[in-house]
Image (tube, rainbow, N blue to C red; front, top):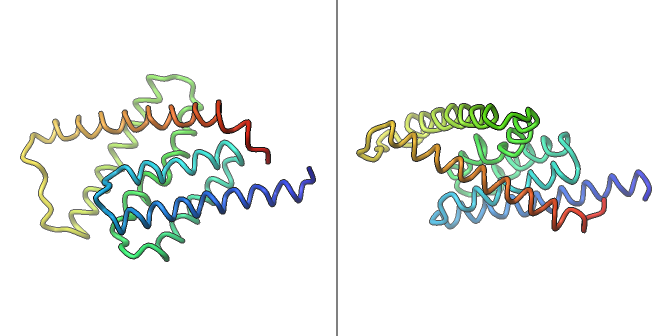
Length: 174
């Protein structure tokens, strides 16, 4: 396969995955009842770009998905979780897991998650919904619940990557 054709295939795959990503974010905006399920699905596309094409395309994919979704999705508020966490998590996960020390990786992921979640909650409370109220639970319990949900998400993400590499990756020839 020529270098030129191989480059065209990479761009085509990125464009198709970008269309899927924007479609899922649009769906989240129009049907917000899906909660975080759609954000989780939209975060998986960048993993495919990372596996099939590499880091530079994945970074470009993230920025393109943010810009295009901002231009296309009608309710911009629903894009905030994707912009600050779900959209870029595949790159963060990839970088952290290169360390090769699972306890350290989990600690780093939790630290990054807590920082992003805190900033996101602060942004949402101050900029978007000043009257948002948290559940009447101790803050430590809320943090632990969110961290457990995050670890489940990270585990699911890992299962998706393993499944993709074992079952689908060999079928795609770029």
